[in-house]
Image 1 (cartoon, rainbow, N blue to C red):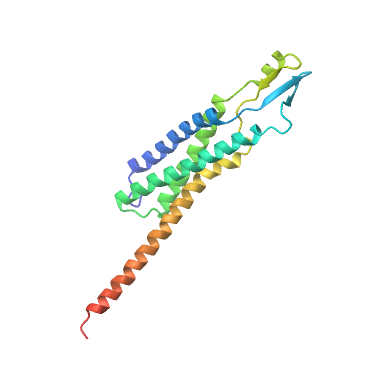
Image 2 (cartoon, one colour):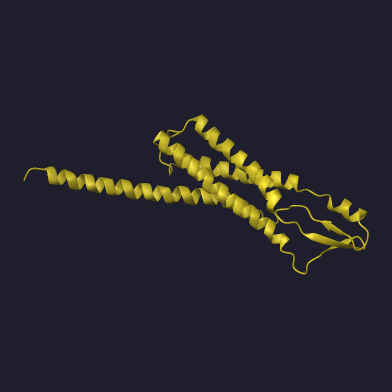
Length: 182
């Protein structure tokens, strides 16, 4: 696979899944929950404009972006050790697919840990009592930030590598011309 072994690819995929699980736990621990007031079997946010509805998505977005950069750094190290271009299509494809997997694992783990049977909590609550909403990713588009961050880092290092190799070739040609007898 252009210099990467199955073991390398399996390692990157396993790393992404592990980071996704860890990210799901961190998301569960860091994301705020919205407090809801219960009146006549209906719920209303306790605050006028609860920030928890967007803050939990922001936490997930930051975790996805950070994990994407971590995966890209690992892929770059593996590619450097194997002397493979990080911009090779198969390397980029596997890195992006593993990023999608990691983001889905983050979403699933966090959602399972933060799941709340809200209808049961509402039915047990008396008027005026408060219940806490569960952890829910409302803007699922933030999951794209993981593979996006990975691709940006890989593309950036691909351009740097391209520029350096071009500079080395130009310097080599210049040195060759200088060594030619006149």
